[in-house]
Each structure stands twice: as C-alpha cells, then as structure tokens.
Image (cartoon, rainbow, N blue to C red; front, side):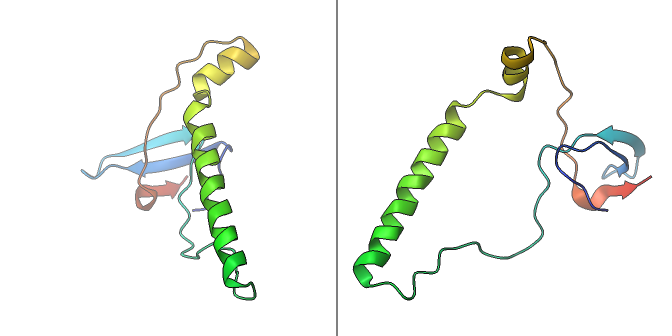
Length: 101
C-alpha cells in the first residue's frame, strides 16, 4: 500500500495480537524503503575543496538541527497560525501491518 504524507487514507491495521481495526489516518511521516544514500559527489574537487564542502555540510547540519529543535509542535503551530486549539490522537503504525480497505 502506498502512503503519502499529509493525505487522508483509509486503512485496515492489524495489531501484533492479530486484532484488526479500520482506521482513517493522515500520515505525518512515511518511512522511506529506498536504501539509497543521498550525497554530494566531491570526487572532481581538490582535497582542500572537498574539506571545505565537508565543513559546510557539517555547518548546515547544525543549522538544520537548530531550526528543527526550535520549531513549533504541530499543535502549537495550528494554535498560532489558525487560532484553533486541537488535541490530535498521535499514533504509530507498523507499515507491515497496514492494508488498504
């Protein structure tokens, strides 16, 4: 079954004990089963330029981590941007236990 982040989907979920339930969910994270490594190819650069790109990637990672650590939670973002208080039911589902309806 193909799941897409931020799109409603009806599923049948089977718990580890075999109990099945019909669910409607909005996936907020869908694990990528593609085992590819995303990278910057620096083969054709000099050693100094390779080291510079490596340092820039490290700095960017720190920047990205800082942004992610200070961003609003989904509930806070909704409250600040739409003036709505919500209490979603956060759940985790094993992809192997999901079937389409």
